Structures are given as structure tokens and as C-alpha cells.
Length: 168
Image (cartoon, rainbow, N blue to C red; front, side, top):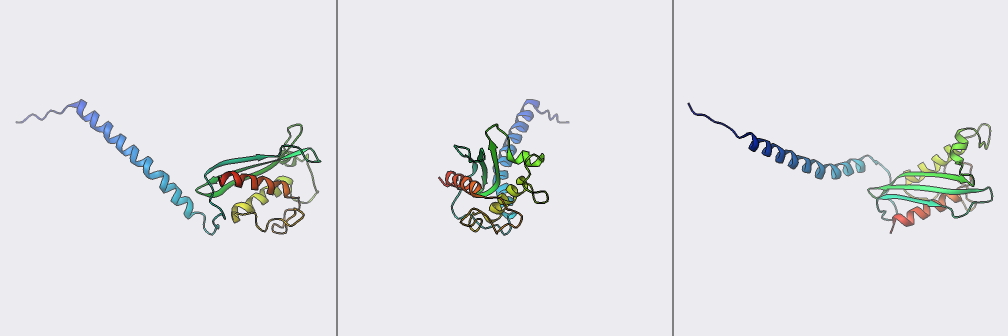
């Protein structure tokens, strides 16, 4: 009878090395795989007009407008596409026009969409089209989104500033 004794230390070391190699492989493969799945999920979303660097970009007016609000835009770019976009207006007291409208404290009309809903619709337009083209007329209003009646100059200026940051 032959005695085949194994060295537990050697088996543990082999197992540890194997786990480390597998972990490195999973990390190396997961990022490109996630990006490929993300690209496939975009469907018919057009490519942006300019190459955009991945990251989160922000813009805020340096001064308040006549109503006492500063436009604030945040844009997220992933895999060269605009994947997140928010627009808010911040009052001199720090209040958020988005939150005020959701709380019923900023009411534009009794039966129309809230300011926050119109802000979201404008952001959705840009993400779906990957451009500001066709969004506003010379007065800052839109016919491209039926539910939006607010002036979009502040939004467009903020998005343009974020696009400039992302294109560098």
C-alpha cells in the first residue's frame, strides 16, 4: 500500500493563487462586457455629434436671474453617450425649484405639468437625441416636446457648458 500524503500548505497556496487569477480574469472581462451590453441596450439612440469623455460634468450660473434663481445642470457621460442629465434652478435662499414644484409650492398652472416634469422632459429629449438641435426656437421655447411650456435657455446654456467640458 502506498501512502499519498498531501501537503495542506501547498494546497492552500494553490487554491489562493487560483482564486486570485480567476478574480483578475473576472475584473478584466466584466468592464468591456458591461460596456458592450450598454451599447447594445441603446437601440436607436444616435451617436453624439462630438466625442465625449466619460465623467460627470456640472454647470451653475454665476449670478441669479431676474426671478432670483441660478440654473444648475449636471450631465453624466458613459461610453461616450449622455446617460444622465438633470436641470434645476436654485433660489438665493438655497431652495430648489424642482423640489418646490414637487411639493406644490411652485405652481405654474393648475392643470399643466409641474416644473420638475418639464425639466425632466427636456433632459429626456437630449438623452434620446444626444443633441440640443431642434430643441428650442429663437425665444428659448420648444415645439419639440408637447408637454414643455417653460423657457429652456438656462437649460440649453447649462447643457452646452457641460458638453464643452466633456469634449475636452
